[in-house]
Image (cartoon, rainbow, N blue to C red):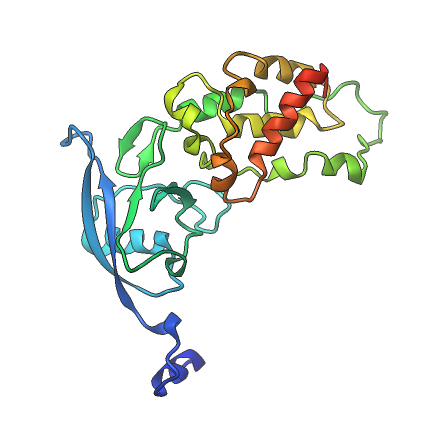
Length: 255
């Protein structure tokens, strides 16, 4: 018997984390083979306070409705594949604990917005990755270093873009952006964040190329600084600040 179980067995010493309770999940469902419009469906699930929303989705799929469809892979906030709207906010299901939500009310779960809905909680990510690829998110170095030498970078130079290296391409920031919802041509915050990561890399030699791409009418100038993207980022990236820094680089004419 574990220590937690012993504590829970003592009157007045119950540990809330080891006491199960019923939580109602209302999930926005869509099956393209049978539905013309998305519909809401509720499920009652026995959960623990330290369980995650992803755990609830697993229980629903494995125990109640095997047709429930969603993406997930690592389940530890690294792959970014299980981004979804939980109680109206973009989050990773694998990082959202039940105890951090208001369980006195049903928990609403739906697919992220702004991307074509495929089924249930799955959206078509192709437009998102198309924008990502368009900003050339890879190192384009200049002249080769001398044989046996590295491209040296100082700690300060690395710190200049360290924050934007944390992106896991979950699309939580981009699909929280009101401009992205209404403008199918906008690159979106994630693409700009990944451009930022290389624009300010001292080893890269194509900063101006990326700035020219982002200077397009659908580039950084479409950002309205609502901070939705920053609030949605599960990695804590200062997305709005990164976009502002790219704008400043454009106004200066270089990175």
